[in-house]
Amino acid sequence: MTTTQHNSTSVLDLISPTLRTDLITMVREDYWPEMTDDQGARGVNQLAAFLAVAANTTEKAAPSLRVDLFWHAFVLHTKPYADFCQALGGGFIHHVPDRSNAGHNPAEGRAAMRRTAEMIRAAGFHTDAEFWPINGAADCTQSYAGCSDSPNTGKGK
Image (cartoon, rainbow, N blue to C red):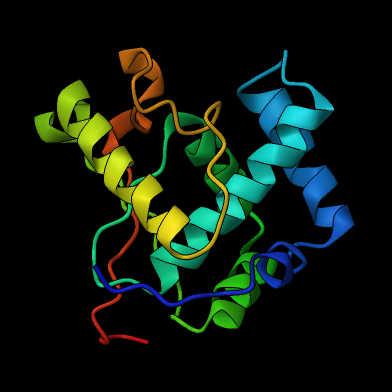
């Protein structure tokens, strides 16, 4: 596993307060109406940690379902999203849905999420159990359709 260490505070600061509020609002309105402000703030932090790792690893990183909700909202903010990816130093992080049957296998989803959570911790970030429910229910253990990042292979940066 190859990951680059980032100062977690500086990565979290790459998302402005205004954008944080907008991402939380979008996730609440589009996917998770009962989400609290605290859950929203933690979700943005978990997204930032996930993307920081995804930007600088040669391995595939897969978000949890809840982290993926925030990723979907962030991708729609194309300019700030591209700027965030650039600031991480690993090039643009593509959101790659996997609509094959493998993308819907709960055991494979849990294993991919476990590996991703380990990479996040190894990079110096906190993993929030509510957003990385490694032993949780199947519908919470993998992104819908098995979304993942585009592994940083040194190509296309």
